[in-house]
Image 1: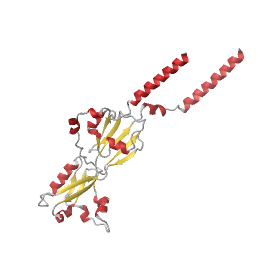
Image 2: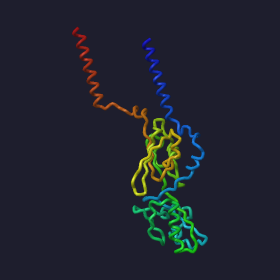
Image 3: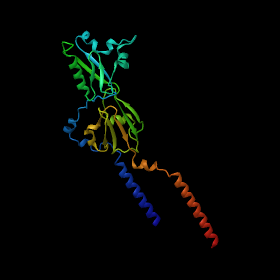
Image 4: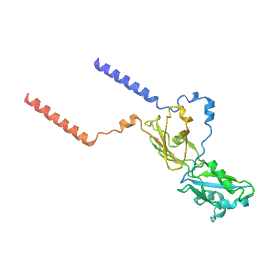
Length: 267
């Protein structure tokens, strides 16, 4: 009877542990309870902030195509046999934000863009061209060519996640990484962000709580690093007995066997 009672208690304990663990698996519990007006206020995607190391494609346009030619690299860098698409894909047509936060722009020279948003950079370049060089304000388009984030830890496919459109959120990045493994902690995902001045900041996201989609860190910035910690189950399964302790336990077991044998023989 005692053995049966012990087994029942152990089974109940395992069931309770399983129930408590299963609550940590779903994402965004009760997301449908967030008021629509709150969701509407978070619909605007964050505009990427430029920083050293960014690779930019910049196009200046106007109704007078001849007038804006000197401000476009594709017009004064000639590649034999290249078409417009291959020109845009070639790194010679990109602007690298250097360590001082500058780009070297045709005619305008050094322009400091680090710390500016993409939209602010577009307006800034347009203001440097008009009215000094043109009689009408040009259109300026800036694209980040190397926008990517990095996902590591307890995900199925860790690595670099590229976002050609220059924007990605946390759930999208995790989905592209194959989602979290069952051993990954969903309540404490770490996001390491590099600021325009080179400093770093760390934020945490609880994927179980739907409120995390309202937080600023839900929309990722270029070069963000997402780290998914292992949960307690994963940590326990990865624990191993040190070799020295194994040897000690083996020696103690042998000693106990010898003492037991001696005691038995001397009775």
